Image (cartoon, rainbow, N blue to C red; front, side, top):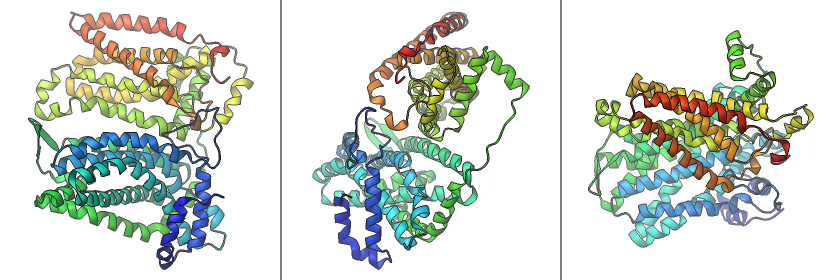
Length: 548
């Protein structure tokens, strides 16, 4: 096996690990094996082309870091912005937290929840502390690479712009944030493992990962809205809830050190910036043994539950899918969307974002003048829920169980139209409709029942848009490819072009509201257009399907 440069650097701290009761030589060998295996894993943010062969010694995660270096350039303006450190560094650390947390969720949860160490190493004469330390060092090795890629250039710019004190303080803050993120993620999983087991546990973990992604986005919006802007100056009004936004802790300690701005809230936030990571580490060390024990619950798969379909659901199914063959594909696609964990982890955060995004454009108006807002036309922001449709339709071809795709060839499928039609219907009914219904209820509460015809029009337009996306994007058998082969970069231009279609729908809808009873004429036209488009869009032959 390759002797990695990272391990050679780690060798300098051998005495430190030995003093902590860790068998360093065994830990080093475990890490060497883990790093070798990582060379075969493709990170979420960077995927190889399906046909390209990858050498075993090539670590794809390291190769993907150039993308994070590119993202880091967007952080530089917050370093150069001025000397209002509470504002600019809170935003800086908030964006940094978003990248770190999302990467931790997508690429490192499998490491934190890995039970192979228990199955392989626990029966061997290997100390448990050594195994646990190897796991954490494994995470921090890659987290350090990611951190350097994200903040290396901005911190060097900060060193030149603000001096050595700013650079050292920012470096320490970044280390504390990394520690806090890892430990908090472990605490969430630890809490779930304490009360649940088996299949239920895996589902909950999946939803927690999705919830964290959404929480990051909402938290970032709260962070931005903590500051008010007047004539390009920044004003800050202390609020009690700001102590729960931990990027502000580190913005506050920077403001305290660099500007000497001594306020009670800043002192409290600065103390939290140091105290909370240290307390978290101490608690994690104390509870780590129980965490490792509860990980064994992941090996329990539970029993499958057979649910009986009600008469009403069967009646609705016959209306949605007239033919028996289409109903079979609809049920199949619905079960895959509901039970496929890898699919949910990729798709559900996008659905969550589609809930949050429409409100971001008028949330300040709710606080300022709710009555005036309710009489306006800000409800058109619900069209932002459509922007996730192309991405999800692209993801419909991927699955963690893609090896079972041989069933498509084995089954007597003569025409592909029922299959593709049923999958798009399953997406609209099972994924998009619940999200849209939730949005509609809130929008009706804000804008009143007067927007009911508009909401119906938006859903019809969403259905038309879904069919257009299917028509334009590459055709692939549903759930037949591995997520490791996903490469959406080649479709970026197409997706951006499809966004113009959403803008066109919004414009036509707005124009229809300017005409007396125009919204109802537009609704009839949209329904007829959807019916005609649905008839011709799914006439796909096997020769036009990719990967067959």
